[in-house]
Image (cartoon, rainbow, N blue to C red; front, side):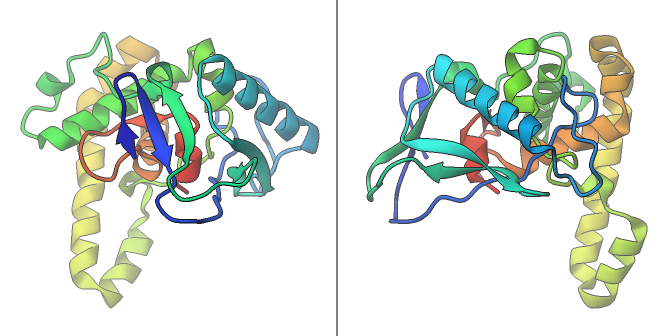
Length: 237
C-alpha cells in the first residue's frame, strides 16, 4: 500500500491473481440479512448486494480494474481483476471518504481506555467507527458484505479452544488468554458509553467483538495506524 495526498492506493507489487474476502450480512444490518446456516445467501440477494457495492464504490470515487464477485458460502464477496494487470499497475484507488480511521465523535476513548497502549486505543477508535457505520445509510452497501463473525476476535475464543491450545503450545495459549481478557475489559469499560452513543443493540458484547473482528481481519496496514478502506478490505482475506 502507498498513500497519496487524498486517497489510498493499492499497487501490484508482484504479478498475481487477486482473491477475496468472506462475507455475509452482519446481524442487525440493513435489509437482506442472510439467514442460511452455512453463511451463504440467495443468489438474487447476493447479486443485488454486489451491484450495490459496485455502484457505491464507483460513485464515491474509487477507481481501478477490479470487480467484486460472489465466492459462495462462508467466502462470500471477493475481488478479481477485470482486465489484465502487471507489476506496478494501480489496482484500486480509494478516496478518503471510504476510509474509516479517524477518531469517532461523541466518545472520549483515550480517557475511557487510559492505561492501554496507544495502538490499542487507536484500534478501538476504528472499531467504534465500524459500529457507527452500521446505522449510517451511507455505509450500508459495504456493511452488507461483511462476514457474520467479523473475521473472529480474541473475545470470541472459547475456553475449550484455549485449553486445547494450551496442551499444544502453552506460551501461545497464555498470550491468547491475555488478549481475550483485554477485549473483555475494553468492552466493559466502553459499554455504558457505547449504549449512550449507539443504543443497547449496537453496544452488546457480541456486536463489539464482531466489529473487532472486522478491524483485525481486514486493515489497510499491518503496521502503523489502524484503518479500514471499503473495497481494499476485500483483498485482505
